[in-house]
Length: 205
Image 1 (tube, rainbow, N blue to C red):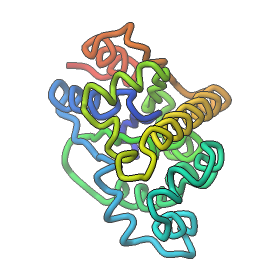
Image 2: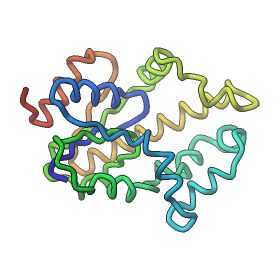
Image 3: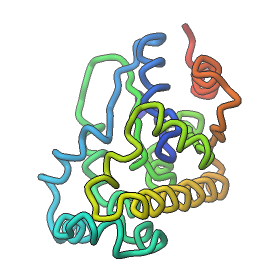
Image 4: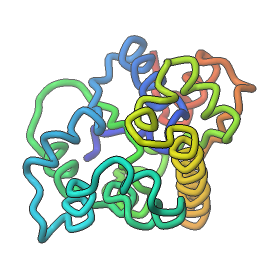
């Protein structure tokens, strides 16, 4: 894992964007944990990922309307770390190519920390609720899930509150474990945020 850098945190915080900038500036390969979800779902079992398999059995209203945001947080499989062992397996495959950056919300602080070659190799981007809404609107994905329910407005409110709670939990864990977090509130440009992450990672042009 000495060749792995980690960018994690709440949805809408710029993880994928910053990873792409690091790829173009420093030649880092990208491991996109979102893109791996389908493969990891296929490789999972009800024994190692029970919450995932319960989620898969629900319809959209059961997922996003019939439960309160706190319950949604506590039972969402990726937020519980299900499938993380598959991420670790993927990253441990021998590869002679340049270092990579792993990015995604599934990279929970308490799961990543034991794998860190150095504490400075990981950062969690922590978007404010206002920034998250703006980010979703800018990429046109605000309603991508909620529109498939019988009450899109309430489903969206539930999703945003769940994600706020998740980001809050991640921020607390980052602080408790002595890891690196950056609040993302729009005060830094993409270039400035990229430079800050690169400096934390100790990357050189």
